[in-house]
Structures are given as C-alpha cells and as structure tokens.
Image (cartoon, rainbow, N blue to C red; front, side):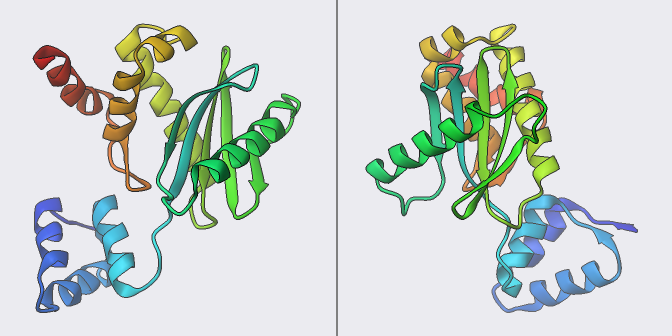
Length: 194
C-alpha cells in the first residue's frame, strides 16, 4: 500500500475543477492509505453515503439520561424523548450475557455499561458495530483521563466540559478524533481561558 499525505489528500478532494476527485480515485485504485475523513468525503462526493453516528446517550442505571448528543436534526424534541425512552428501556432490560448491539427502528444501537453508566450510540446500517464499541471505550478512557476516574456526578456537575470532549471526538456524525491527548487539548485551553 502506498502512504498518502493527509494534507495532500485533503487538498485533492477540495479542488473544484474535478481533478482532485480523479486523482483521489486514482490513489484509491493504486492502494493508497487515505485518512478516514478524506475517505468519508470521497464516499460523499462519489455518491455513496458515509456511515454516521446518529446520537450518543449517557444514561444511569435508573434510566435517567445524563448526556444526549444528536446529529440527526430532523427529530423533534418529543420524538427524541420517545426514542430515548424506548431505547433505554430496551437496553437496560437486557441481560449481561446478551449482545451489546440492538436494532431499533432505523438505528443500530451499540451500548456498553461502565460502572453505573450506560454509554449508547445510535448508528446507521453502514457503520461498523465493533468500531463503535471501540469508540465508546475511547470516549470512556478520555473522560477518565479528564475527570480522573469518571463517575455520574462528574458528568452531571461538568456537563459543558463533557459536551466539549464529545464534540472534539464526534462532529457531524463522524468520528474525528480518537487520540485522548488531542481531544483534551482544546478542552484544557477552554478551561484556562474560562
């Protein structure tokens, strides 16, 4: 496989005259390793939709939602509440020996329990379930690094910080950062400034 510089690849798919798309397609055919963000943009330009994370929920054992982040803007507040209630009820009633992936409506819900918190991610049919489980684990590790062993109270009392961390890791339904240090750097800058 040929390595591909992310900056060059990003410039290629941006080019308005279409030559960037042709070059990018040629690089893919040649077996070049492209950055994930560029791959997703390439799929969007070519016509196949990129896999998406539709929502992220952090819920306690009693079923109370502590954090909700949606990328699907078509849902109203009432629809979101109903969706949350259905999904939380479905996931919390499952036995520990059952699979951590549930299909609900048009979503695949991938969830994982850490102590008293459930981390749930709603994804579309194209997204990789095991990759989503790894992303949940990465989110927990990042929150652990910031809060020094994160718990429900940390999230409740630092809701803005929790949202900033999630926003650094997931943007527009795509995973944009998995490096804990890189995800926390902007949050540290915000803490210093504020």
